[in-house]
Image (cartoon, rainbow, N blue to C red; front, side, top):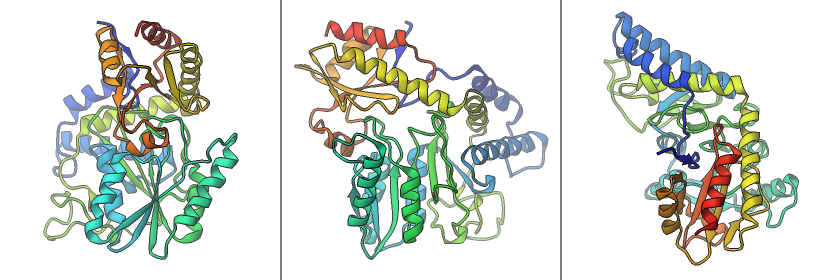
Length: 385
């Protein structure tokens, strides 16, 4: 079956051919264990690691030695949050955080960590300035004496909402707070400047906007982070300082225990090359255009209820079908070869903003390789639901 794939917020598909080729090349040539041996396949594996670290650092304006590879954005967020947050402190999270942020923060309550939620925009705002002002006012209102950091989901995985990273970063810098950014839905579709935005830890997956495969993600730490102060999440072999019973003091080895998945890391490096060749802004603009195109067509269907219909800032469209459960509609669409996602999308806070936390909703999310024809196919199928 030829699928109409509209679930790119979960994982991007298809991958560029060059990304698939990079994976296979690494599997057949760089099959050694990087940093553990001096033979040629191991050195090739180390070269793949360095190449990808350099690509990530260059793309986001950071330092290659401060890239820590993880298995996913969830792993990256857990690592960053738990590495940076001391006991008996307070964090600020936005009202649209994914469970990849919300749950590890909640788990830190056993160490005396508390959190508050700040607004992700102004209700009924007509421009970015109003949204930014509302975010900053809410941060100031929720900040406490023991607040140590702010976490920001740059773009929601189901709502067309984007947080103002530079303004939040400036606020954190001014008030001595660390700043963790969840870029799961924005990396590869817009410019993010680590140092300019005063980001302490940028967390992202490799398999979404950066065009890589599942099984890789990363944290890029800012230069101001004191490596030795970072709390470790895992301990084990690092390829250096093997006589010590503790992890090395410096990044990336401090937070990278065990063997790295070279094949998907090599593919991620090639994915970033692809994104830079096309231009991340161009990719983001295309996805936003398709989102607006779909919304315009869905507005004409009386039995479709669009959630946040007037915002079209990026790739996702959230909606419900009158009288039908999201899961039933998604299953019927799947039978016809159309792939989208139903439910709460692991983001109950975002659904609470639009009143769909009890019922869930359907999400169509576009990627670079989608076309207007894909949107038309979904609209045609929904006419008969």
